[in-house]
Image 1 (tube, rainbow, N blue to C red):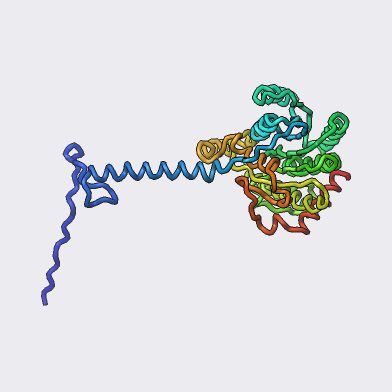
Image 2 (image 1 turned 90 degrees about the horizontal axis):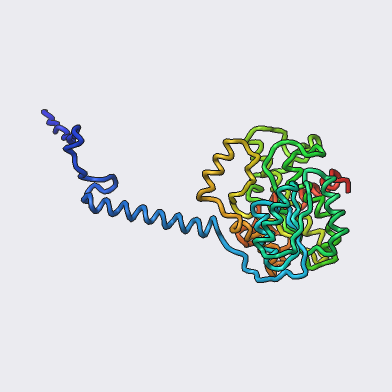
Length: 353
C-alpha cells in the first residue's frame, strides 16, 4: 500500500528588508495594516485610561471630607519637618489649630516652622525639639510641653524611619523610634488629653504591618524586633514596627474606654517622601522609580491622617485601623488581645513607667 505524503508548504521569508511591506501584525492575521494600527492605538489609549483610573482610585484614593475648624485647639505632630507630617501640620494650622512641630533636627524644624507659617497663613505654629530615639528627649519634650501649653486636643504620632542601628538607649532603631518613643510620649501626655476631651490620638502605621510579627523573646533578649541586618531583614523589621503601631492602638483603645479620648491607626498610602533617605542605594533606586506612578504626593498622603484626626462620628471606631479614609479589617495578629497587652507591658518596662 502506497502512502502519499503531501509536502508542507512553508511561508517564504523575505531577507531583503527593503522589499518587505507590512502584511500583517501579531494578533491580527486577517486585518489590513491600517486596521491593525488603529487597534494598537485604541489598545494603548485603553491602557492609559485604565492606568489613570487605577491611580485616581487606588493610589490617590479618597480625601478627608471634614470641615471642622480648630480655633482654640492644640495639636502635636511628630516628624512634621517634612513629608506628610509637614503637610498635615499645614492643613491643621489652616483650620485654626495651634500646631506644635515636634522634630528631631533643630535646623530642619525651624526651617519647617517658617514654611508652615507661610503656607498656612497662621502664626500659631511652634517648634519644639523631640528626638524619639532618646527616651530622655521624649521626657524632656513632654515636661516642657506640659509646662508651657495648657491644652492638647490631638496627638498625631506621625514620625517614622526606615533605618538600621540602635537608639541612644540601646533599642533597635525602628522599634525605638517608630513604636517605643511614641508609646512613651503618648503615655506622658495622656492625662492632658483626658482633661481636654473629646480628644484623639492618631498613630501613623503602614500596610507593611501585614508582613510584620512581634518576637517577644527577641525583644526581651536583644531589645530589638529581629537580629538580622540584611536588606530583607530591614524590610521585615520595618513591618514589625508598624505592627507594633496597630497593636498599641488596639490596646490603647481598650484602656481609654470610659474617657473622652479615642485613638486610631492608619495606612497613609505609598508616599514619595524622605522616609527612604536612610536606606541603601538599591532601595532608594527602587522606591524612586516606583514613586513616579505608584506613590501619592504628601498632600494626598495626609488625607487619612486628617480623617482620623477630624472626622465627626467615628468615635465608636476607636482602636480601628484606617486606610483610604475608611476603617479596614486587619489580620488576627493585628488585633490579638494577648499580644497587644504583652507589647504594652514590655513597652512600659523598657520606658521605666
